[in-house]
Length: 147
Image (tube, rainbow, N blue to C red; front, side):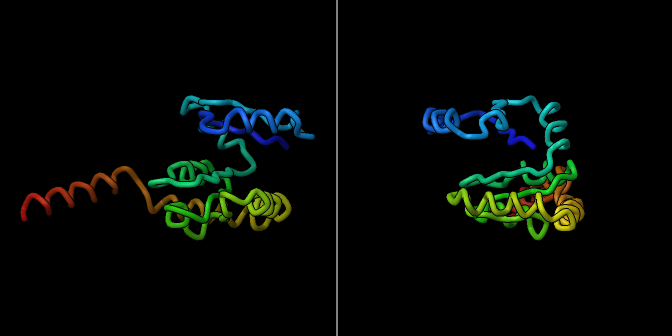
């Protein structure tokens, strides 16, 4: 099992890379950086779980992307993540590495839970679509224009 990190490195990159260089299991950690969408979808679908411990999100699209790929999701218990993930995700404090690790271990050790999260994920992702979003936005525009 490997930990694969995708996305642009941001603040505290040097500190992170310094700590990672001395990490006992460094060979089991891959830093891939930015991944084009088509490749990211394949990588996500091949994952054992998506771990998305973001500190703040306006929506949290990667949560639904993971669910759409049939992968259990572990995300933050803050911001919009609990609303987006609903009962189909596990939640952790993004500032608490032990909490994140405990959720990762739970998914790894409990195959029944993992399968339940995948099933709930399929249900959760059905609540969202670009068509529904466009329709909702259009309704707001029409409502505002007629006032």
